Image (cartoon, rainbow, N blue to C red; front, side, top):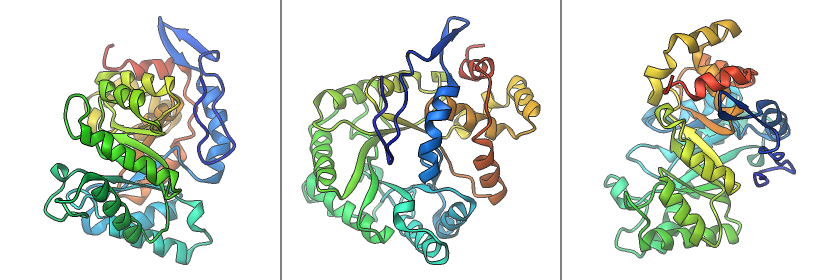
Length: 315
């Protein structure tokens, strides 16, 4: 199985042939994944994204701080209920104006959100048909982010809890057209179940490049979804890796691993995520934590440590 080419001439190796079994649980050889990612991270840092949700009036400064700290991939959404996309654009602009970087050095990801997930400040006409809503929201995102293209455009969750509705396919087809027109490089979906993801894969003309989900340790770090992603050359993005798993990552055994490396626990979790093929997001608002996260992502955990963290909810 090969993960599709993203942002460079790099590809994963065959992870099935380079995997090992520990305690009857399949664990990918983290050395292979780690080595293959290194070329990709030389260009930007797409295997660690800075998330801008719930930052409100701090969004501009925190976006700038994250870029100055070394993040090169930014996640946002055209959803004023939880994001301030325009603030992200202002932070990016300030960074590009003051540093020796160009727009193409950054990876910008934003999202289309249905009316049900918005407040009254909509980026589109709610009476318009769904293709028009997507196009209006997309154009608004371009304006907010002061760019003429988006690296990754995400459907911010299906319109229904179970299955996919006709409007989900209609929205997806419109997103496909944006990719065909080279207005976005990649498309993806978030907050999706295994069943919904498989339905989309089966019917879509263009499969998602990315899936972004809240990643729970109690679900094997979203194991079912990640397996579908691996089988279909989809990159899995995990958010709330820390906040959704406080009870598990405070486990003394994980703290012991962190102590053995002389690193904070979050660095261990993000390194673990990277080594099992998850593209992690962090939303910290403290520069010291941004620096720690970026440095800690390169910790090389042993396969035994990977196994412990991977199965922490079951042990």
